Image 1 (tube, rainbow, N blue to C red):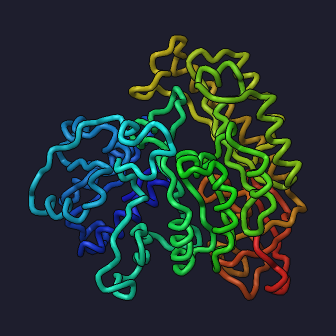
Image 2 (cartoon, rainbow, N blue to C red):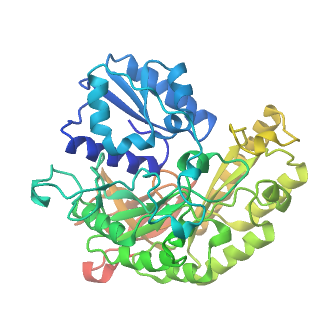
Image 3 (cartoon, one colour):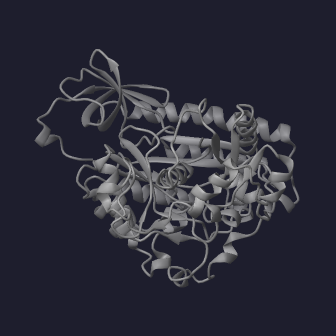
Length: 478
């Protein structure tokens, strides 16, 4: 069971690959002898959902194992409060088959003590690639299979060299591809770097090989994920490596679209904007982590920018590609946030023309600087501000969708609704978070195809479009 973000999805597929290679068989939850829950530990609501899923799994009578962010973050503390589950660390992933063998045999290992994983790798990014430090999830190197690639169990990634072992847990034409783990930023509200560790990039040759394998399993769109994608390559000695990686991945046969997520505004360079808006097969999609628009609040968050700087960045993006998609998330109710700060955020949202807007209320996170700040707001006031901003966001997203009426968009078909109607996503719509596009009048193509369509109407954040039938050779990639 996987909870949380797309990064966790990749980690779960690594675990599934390792388990299958170790002789385990994936089964339905009713037949399972062990239930492995890949937990999320990002915010309070995610923690509670993870605990609830662990308790539900324990009720099935199966052995229960907690892995993932909640397990890594709290370790022995979680084990003491939840004796129904064995708690594993990221360091257990490399030998996960043996760990579950022990669980099934009734053994109970002491859970790890929580620690700051940033200390496991050198401070200098350039020293990390050759360091013997921790092995982050999603980076697991394995030795070649004794019988060669042909003898691998079905669904496992090839391991002709040191490659990530992975087994797809869901079908469909879209899959996440983890390009890096960890984060070196020190945002005052965020605990992720402490339990995910320092920033570490995956080698580009591993990413291209995994993209080729995913394409061979029916994937047509890759969503590149990490904690901070714009830092990709800095620890490999090339801070512009992302600019080179994107065209390489877009050139993989069978991959029609590359989408990149988790961009830090402070690290978005003109050269990266150029690559993202001009490379065939790369979606002009900018998932920009603004978090707020008041310079005062952003300084307290230990982040870059303000309304004017963010507006200028959006201007650069739209000058390069007027139809580019932009989404962002915002935290409301941060300690010390004043009504004037909220007004500044509202003004930015009204000016920015974002396709997708996420609004979240601030909550203290264990071990973060923000939890110690003065000026904490009453939860009821935070909830009021969230409701106000979320209502504005809904209106603005609907307006932006309406602005796209008349545009020709490239839609990846993901679900056949019958009678020539398909549900899919345009280039500005990421999976699960940015709305969908319903395409009518489709004939002769099916799920997994990337087709052109003209937008005819907006429905909130969603779009409705009519298929533009063109010869397949002229449709192109995009």
